[in-house]
Length: 310
Ligand SMILES: Nc1ncnc2c1ncn2[C@@H]1O[C@H](COP(=O)(O)OP(=O)(O)O)[C@@H](O)[C@H]1O
Ligand SMILES: [Mg+2]
Image (cartoon, rainbow, N blue to C red; front, side, top):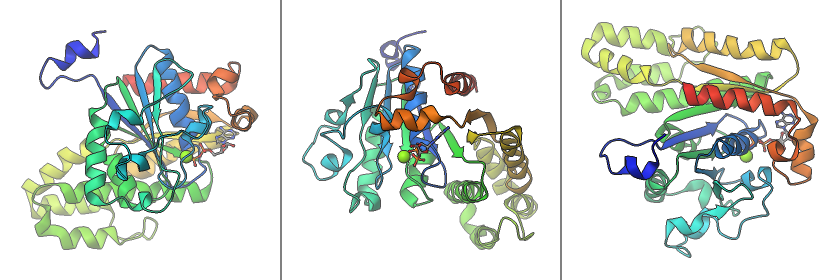
């Protein structure tokens, strides 16, 4: 593999990859996934930066076995730190650094537009092979925006109804945010808004129907939308799996998203429910390092390899 400096000299060619890890709900395992995917990539020899963007409940450092970091994103927003690179905190894993989220909920959760765009730009400019965004819960604009700017979006879901519903809600928010960014859609905004307000289960017009309708009414806009939405291919991880039925939920989410949203999802794998997760959290040690015999080692291996390939 060429090193990133060699690539940096070629305009338009970059090997840097930004992956965002989201999911509708708190406590589904976003930080667990972010931390351990970051560790896997770093152990493979990649230079990795994991960024805690859960601006109200930052806990990525715990999953990596670090104490509360001295510098956080709030220091940059409040201008106590002016050089963005000074936010990087080393971890016990040599190729892996983190940027910690804010510890104070106020202000950061409602990042101002300007700050947000500046932070997004700075994050994408960081020097690394992989940059991972550990996102906050919910569908706040900030979270959706961080998700949309990534090259790959990963959604962590628990096999339980509330988490599954939140996942659809998250996909829906991203879907419509992306849709509204497409050139030429302003003239059909009323159609979009009607569909956006429909419930996923209510049998009303679906986003997939909307795309058909737009194509009939405005073939050019329809074509652009299809092209753009073809790139929207979120990756699904089912966490805390206890049975085959839990794994199968991944396939049904895939098929519902195909029918309802007209989008394809990738299902790179699942994570077993494993006691070693909370034991490692309690010991404040990274799971993959502290429990090399845990079932999750194989789970993560498969997921990371599939994510790299896709
Ligand atoms: N596969 C798993 N097996 C057992 N417990 C898990 C698993 N995944 C997550 N947990 C538990 O759920 C808690 C929340 O996970 P976390 O990654 O902090 O969620 P989030 O970042 O989405 O809020 C963990 O501290 C752990 O106790
Ligand atoms: Mg978290």
